Image (cartoon, rainbow, N blue to C red):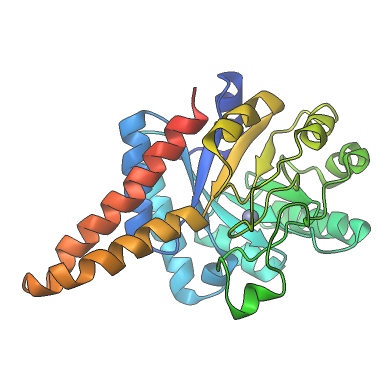
Length: 291
Ligand SMILES: [Zn+2]
């Protein structure tokens, strides 16, 4: 069923849980995530990368995800992930995204605020006042779509290199942007960690006492489950997963493609393995965050 992102997350927090968000580059993964959410009786969030939303086919994927979310037996939100492009945001919302991460975190503080305000004004003007906005304060290291490789090499994440959210800015930022959720940088990174992740619980605690809106943790892949379960206690109501989900699916495809080729070019069988890999990952994340 259709769910507003802020309401989905707030009601989970009231039960001491956080809602996992999964990056969906494709429909197979999304089907697996929604089935896992239905099996667990929990809500989930389908994330669409901005690189996907910037294409005509990607906008059709958003429309398909919207249909999937609407037909789900549990609350499911469809969110455009990290975008600083107002045109992409407008297109994604028109295609069916009910929430967006308006990401000005790499900009100067005032420019970040101006971007979020511009997105809010644009959405309100275009009759999309219901669209929920997540904003981001503090820069996350790493690449969202690739764990490592040429593009990510110069920004290879390692513990402690992320620009932490300045908790002193939080109240002002939330008040002036009107953001409904706030993504924070507390030692979390996009992609794969080099060494052990070091989440700064002290910084998170400092942020949590300064705002009532739900906080969001990106780059959860690699953070031990024992750490993640503490998040909801600090008002983290949404946790984004991408890298680990991709790794699992790619490993499965690598290991099982030959078997299915020998089995009469059995694409359906291979897709079932993809579904199983993504579904198992989603079920584990859902269980970890809902206690
Ligand atoms: Zn992110």
